[in-house]
Length: 313
Image (cartoon, rainbow, N blue to C red; front, top):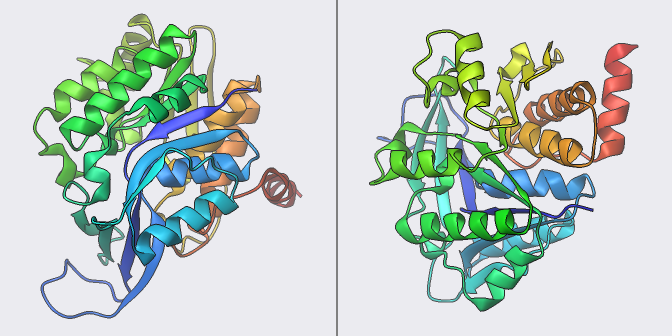
C-alpha cells in the first residue's frame, strides 16, 4: 500500500470569535486548534486509514503537544516531527471578515517549523514513502524548500509520484524565491490540485480548457480544480468530469481544501475511479466546513460513506 509523505508547517490556529478586519484592537479569541495546511492534509489521510507521515518541527510547548497528540491519534506517522525544546510552535491568528474572507497573522518562518531539514533519519523516512504531497504554503523558508525538493528527488527516483496544491496565501507570496520554488515543484508534479484561479498561475492560457490542456501537455497526469461549495472538476488526457458540491451549512471553511485534497489523493493512489475519488473528496470537504476549527471536521471513510448516502437519500 502506498505511504504518503508531506513536509511543512505544523502550527496552532487561534480564531477571533467576532468578525472584523484584522487585529488592530483587542478581540475575543478561541483556540488553540491544531493546524497547518500539510498537517491538516496528512491528518485527514490518516483518518482514512491511509499510511502516511509528515516531516516537520514543533516547539517543546503545549501548542506542539496539541498537534502531536492529534496527528498520532488519527494514525499519522509522527516519527519525522522533531521537537525543539528551545523553539516555539508556529501559530496563525485568524479573523473572518463580514464577507467571509480571512485576515491572518502568521508566525511560521521564525518558529520551530521554519528550520526543517532532512537529516539521515528523515531521509530514511522519505525512502519509505511512495508519494509526496506538496503544499505551496510550505515553501516559506530556504531550508524547507531544500528539504521538499530533496524529498521529491528521492520519491521520484524510487518510482513514486508527486501531488501539488498551490494553496497560496497573499502573506506567503512575498517570500523570496517563492515563484521559482513553485515552478520547480510543478515540473515534477503528477497530480495538480489548484483552487479556482490558481489554475492560471503557471500557464499563458485565458480559459480553463486551455489552461488544463497546457498543464497536461507539460507532463502532469491529472488536474483537479477545486471550486469550494460549487464542487470540483477532474481532467486527464482522456477524461473530463465535473461534480457539484454537497449543500451543507458552512461554519468554518479553513482546512476544507486540505481535507478534499487528502481524500482525493488517497483514493487516486489506491486505484479509485476519478468519479469515486472526486465524490469522496467533495464529501470530505463538505464535512470539514461543518465544524469549527481546521482539523475538527476530518472524516473517516465510514463517516464519508454515511454522509454520501444521506445526501443521496
